[in-house]
Image (cartoon, rainbow, N blue to C red; front, side, top):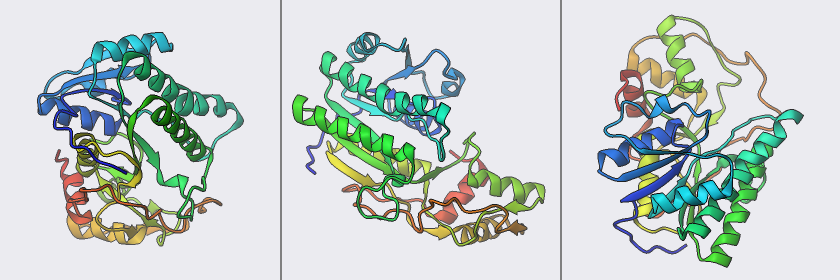
Length: 301
């Protein structure tokens, strides 16, 4: 790992995955800071997710070709490319393999090649703690994790052969207000608000929950400080079991939650504890679990 501070590392940026929850949050932060933000979308992307921000990014539609991507990168002339796009599947079926490989390996490789052609060399991309299944080193929990590692190997080639500067940040469970995804925190909130039973696999499962603002801070810090290498663990300020997380919701909101541990089985391949990896130099999570849940329930940004 090496670091070369780049104060203008986020003056002009290009993002993939800009319509994701994390992508939208990063776009909003950058626009609020006055950055020139460009977002790559596919024809079927939900562009309404980019509405309501403090400003508007420049949106480029990708037709599926490297040529089109090269033109987009050339027009954007980014100081940093944030490659956030991914296709997540906890378990896959045979008919999902092509999509998983194309989205997580093929598209990412097109982005790298377009950067090479257009002369852009700075990349921030994302890994998953599922690449380290109960192991300090690479051991993929699922095919999704294996595709993320395959892309990491391709990034390494572009670093070595074409002088790319890249940093990989490994994400855990990201949460925050305005999240439209059907995730754990929304399930707990809805059960609490509706006085329904919260169904859980095992109350003792350990989670690493990271508030959205902290993740955005990590991405911007890596870009602005010119940090290279990784994978760096973007871990929360504290880990907690599912049972403990439910208790925090009860404490913050003052409303009891009826939960049903063991309502469905734990997957056969499930980590005993999230990966503990090297921290991103100069960054640490600031929002604790209780404060994060309070903001989540209040809908604060």
